[in-house]
Image 1: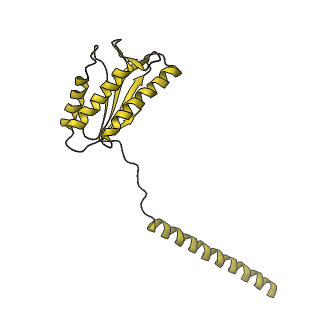
Image 2: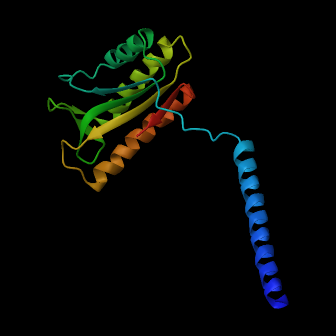
Image 3: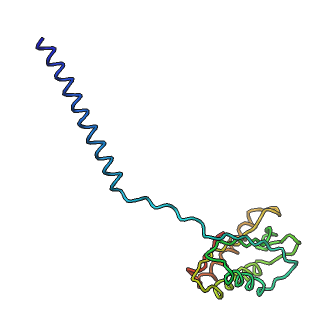
Length: 172
């Protein structure tokens, strides 16, 4: 009977040890959860997201693009993400062709995007922010060289936009 009593005593001791350890673990977990600061959530997209597709019939007038975004900045374009799509890549020189078949050279695309951003900065009276992307599409067959030239287009625009940071940023 003494041997059985020791075995029973060992089982009870193990059970109590297990309960004690489980309680300590649960208390520690509870304290960690309660005292841990809230995890920050990711910021959402800006209040407005716009896409502008170049459907012009050949206008390479920078004033049109300046007026377009200046008007938006004055009339409610508040901290927005905007995509300017000048059409599909055309050739290997960074040119883009719009839906009317009008080709914008790489220099024209950069200048039009610059004027769009400039219109925002000059007419923005609320200290809002513009995230601007020069877009392309797959309406024309793409290849590596055209993609590399498009990257250069974005880089040229980015170099110009830096003077307006942080109010304008470039995405591609």
